[in-house]
Length: 155
Image (cartoon, rainbow, N blue to C red):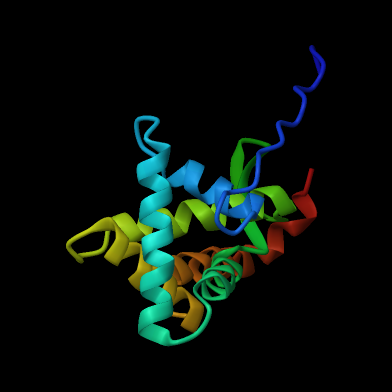
């Protein structure tokens, strides 16, 4: 370690639900510094989820996020000229950020017309345990399971 670790920045809770996780999600969703647009997209998507499923939209979103967050992942490790994919536990902060990134990434890749609709559809799918983001998590877990033999190379 050459320098002191940077101080952890704490983010303010969002105005509607007063939840810091929502703010974090919106910060990842935001493009070109347009935070108010990102907030409107998120709030409208949550409202759409509520409308379509009939249950609490924020709770559905949290459930979807929990279904997308990975528990293990593989990291490359060089041992004696060979590169091994070593399965590792995911730190809690990284778990959350990966879940958010995947949810947004696969929402953007969907075919619906507006981002609100895409995000709402991906949240609904992820809350049920299906959809592209959940598939990504399952693939990550499967890869870690397949490389369990190299777990003794952990660093």
